[in-house]
Length: 457
Image (tube, rainbow, N blue to C red; front, side):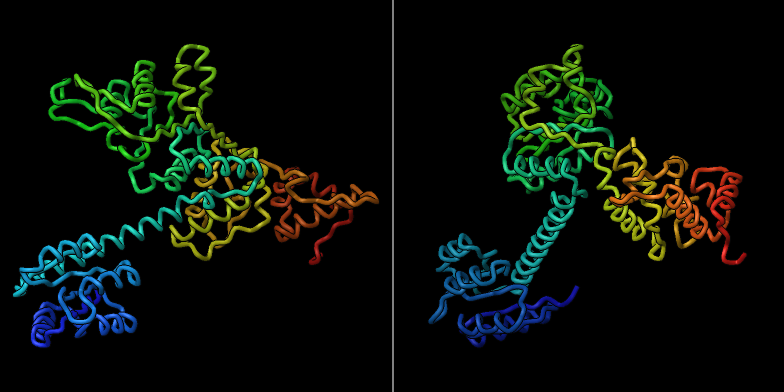
């Protein structure tokens, strides 16, 4: 870490000099000013990590200097130096934004400890600021990839829902990005600085999920050796994300309904309820209406959850988003695995667009990472693609063929496709035939039919 720069402001030349020397002996870089005006002039010229200012100075007082610093340099930490008789004023300065105060005569160890804690506090605030900016960048709605109308409609509704604390139900197939959307709603909401706690209702054994969700008291069951806060209580003030809500046992659904209606949870073994303030976002890949019909999901709970329903479309319904997703995942995987020189030819994109992706975005991301890890050369080829993608033949729409108004010769199109396939694979007939999804004998027959010859021939 670079040497921290402190600004000491004091109208007493002797005390200012002594304080400077003592702090420099502790490893700080120290600059000084004799009054508030000099301090402000210094701050305009030099970056400073912390200001130590005397409270009682002629002209501009330490309190007035603090107010100017809070206005012009809101992230700068200020410590007040005060005599015993002005401690009440120093406390007033802390209410106005000073970090702390030390009293005269200044004890260097006390001063060093206060400065050290103040700088640690400032560094922690900066880390929080950076983390918040990172979360904004990572979970902004604009970072959910895709520009298809069906997806943009969902994101528009989600962004409006984020400004409230209303309960949200996200529906979509496995791998469509339900948790990513839930995080975007939370981190763009008024509760963004409070916890986002996830509970996967399908991954926790039924006998444990009540304790996990609502907590338990000591001795409530075998193994309960201490009190435990549940995930709902941990999320107090923030968001509780209930993934795979359709897997929640029926007997616990009524307790979740109580949380939604009254903001209360009852811990396992407790005789009293606990108040909890959480926003609920639930997600499911199941048909909850059908579950209501067969009695496995409570209708009243469904309507409490689905105040704002968001339906994420499967990837097959927004194939126009696939090229953007492929590019983003490819860049990310190359960086992760150190393969900056690996290339993915645009000619392979139609195979990605033609595939139906039953595992949705998650499957696409996994396929891209697997290609980056396993491809031997510096360019991904058709043979590197998983067999289901090789098997898919690009459609006319995927190939972006324009039909001219005056008509077109089918034989000319077929001849051009055969010629391009042969050129693509350097006239290797076996690879060209596999690419065109025809047999090699059929390819040779059509090459003869259309008088296609290699330039080498």
